[in-house]
Amino acid sequence: MDGMSDSPWSGTGLDALGGRVLEHLVGLPSADSAEVAEALGVSAAQAEQALGQLEEASLALRVDNGRRPRWAAGPPRAALGMLLARRRAELVRAEGLVERLHEVYEAVSGPRAAHLVEVLEREEEVSARYGQLLKGSLAEVLHLAKPPYVTDSVVPAGEPGVVDGVRMRSVYETDGFADTVSLETALRGTAEGGELRLASRLPVKLVVFDRAAALLPVRGDRPAAGSLVVHSPALVEALVALFESVWARAAPVSLESRQDWPVPDGGAKPRPDERTREILRLMATGMKDETIARVLKVSRRTVQKHVSEAGSLLGARTRFQIALLAAERRWL
Image (tube, rainbow, N blue to C red; front, side, top):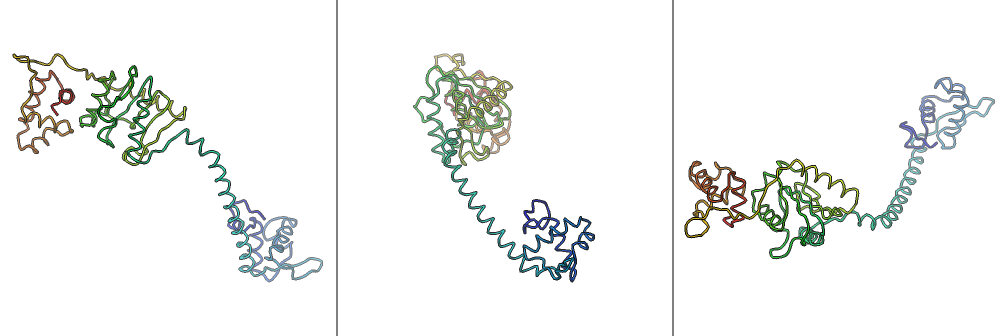
């Protein structure tokens, strides 16, 4: 009576036929196996087998032991209550077995899994682990960068980011690239020989170190929720393929130090006035001209005039170039 079907009786341990026979019997004073078989459309042998099983479970009683025994239903609540109690006890034992098996699995698989994925729960852990992986890289670092950012600086000022000879390739999301963190990070990376590209939208924040380990956030919208360090070769290979796909579609950008800025008579490099620098600082945060004008209580035309003058001083043609070069020149 190990009901394995979708019968409503399976939870009691009765199979579907046993449940139907019981339902039939409770509505009658008594019945023999032939009557049960005819009523349910089954063979006499099937009816007799079901009645015998119901008798073992105290759900059916022989009320006539003549040549053709007759059967009557026993009190369902009491008999089924005992069945259900036994089933509950079996489930408790099964749950205990599952827990013991899981403990053994964790003991064997836990250390192995830890070598494949590290979970970093605190912000300081993420920064420290990033620094370790960056300094330990010997060939290549791949970087997809997008806001929101967790910290103001991933690598402490004055400390080397990567060793000589390491190729750094970074793709920044355009919409978030004008903030101070991304500008400083990009300038530092390109100063160390890195290559930079821009994309309108990135699928994930990601850093891959020597194609052997990858760092990415647990949740893209909440970097402070923690990060994962992936060591699984198959997963790292997939993340590298993702980076290469994004890199191929991204637009190249050069942040090399300019030696061709306009220099007035006297040899000193030009500096903008304080109002222009203030406008550039707001522009670098991603503000539009209309918003800057409202904040500074000037006209939109005035904002555009100052931005245009800054572009002339820097030899830049686009707002993006102006923001990058102004940061490099320490105007921000």
